[in-house]
Length: 227
Image (tube, rainbow, N blue to C red; front, side, top):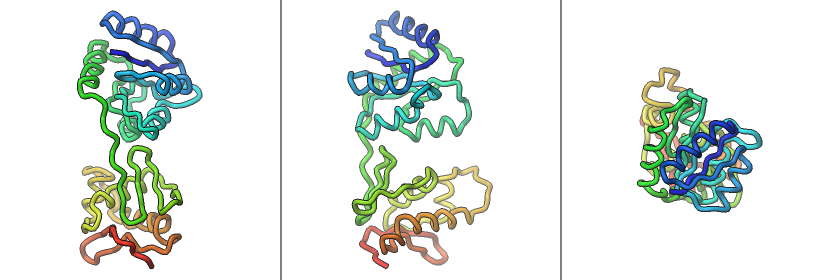
């Protein structure tokens, strides 16, 4: 197994390197995100251990850049950030696993072995509805040849609608899949985000692809729905 460790805590990274080498692994180390991304691009690794908060480039950005380039080497985030939304962001940007510092060294080794056994994931397919395209890996949206900038939540709502293209989905389904089953806020938040999406991916292009189905919910049509 060949492993890349990217962590700006020099002593910690060196300790992990020595431990993994004692397990028979070949280990390279980088101490900032920019150098880590360069190493990941230049060499083939079985897995990458990636810190989140680093000088120059965060671990999130490193992982996102690799995924956008079609590199699906397994990534394990090893970080002091322990909030649930930090973990969500790490996994949403393409990470495969998450381990919080301080950590159990045997657990780290076991998780790396598990990631390598699973192998490299295939890049998710690009979602399409007429000339609207969403690349889940790169987290980019295009209407025709024009890129549309969306927030993370807008992207999540659009992703769900596109995966259920031409189906009617309820507010409750959108909330459960985007905000989570334990969401206890105002259900009208869905209408707000539908409005945001229409303002970004439909109206500027003379489209009406996101449709309201009265009494039922919303539907994103795969046809060329021009206004």
